[in-house]
Image (tube, rainbow, N blue to C red; front, side):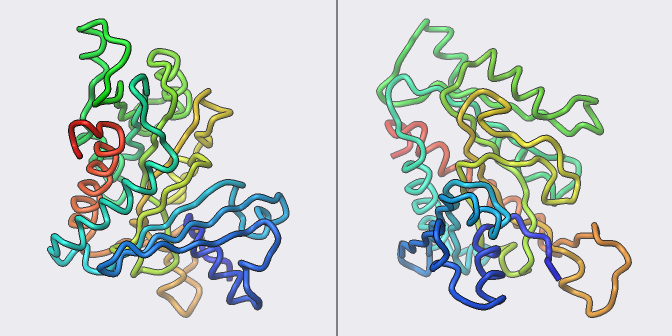
Length: 279
């Protein structure tokens, strides 16, 4: 059975389980970085169309940051996860004094497993209004950052990609950072894993309600997506037919997962975009 997952690292594992080493497939490269304290970043680059088809992922770079103990109130581990994520994000976003970024918190704040995006977005240090106020074009310490929580189509009546596209026309960012909940096939990854990719994202994919993909072709700016798995395929927990191929389940500590990971993601983004303030 092909279980639902938004994680490139799990797609790699599925190929490995089917037989053979996926890293030997032409167009798939894998590199691991050890940040200490059990924090590991796995960088998977998909560079060939056939490899993308095998992985069922778009061509591009996928970084998975994993660590045990994030929910155990281990400050050292959490701090190291922030450092790892900021370091990997910094490789995709090169800070300069005229950098403009739009941060988008995808999801539904009223549905806890889908509220990661709005929760993280609420903690972003927004600066665009200050650049406008002081008629500034550049700053050596901070980026020009705008933030948007577009909501979901069921409550706004508008396609999320269209809302973001209009915001891009207003803000003219160099980069859009989209934060959203994801789906995984392994329940342990709901409290240990963050995925970072430069391929964009499909809002609602994690909860089985996939909308128009948000990528550079659609919105007119480079899109970097950051996500955390907050649901898993229900079929992974049942040996029999659950009768609903779209059913997903979440963890009993989902509130803590959203709180901790929204802190980590927002901290890493703030460090990356405002190095003169947060470093």
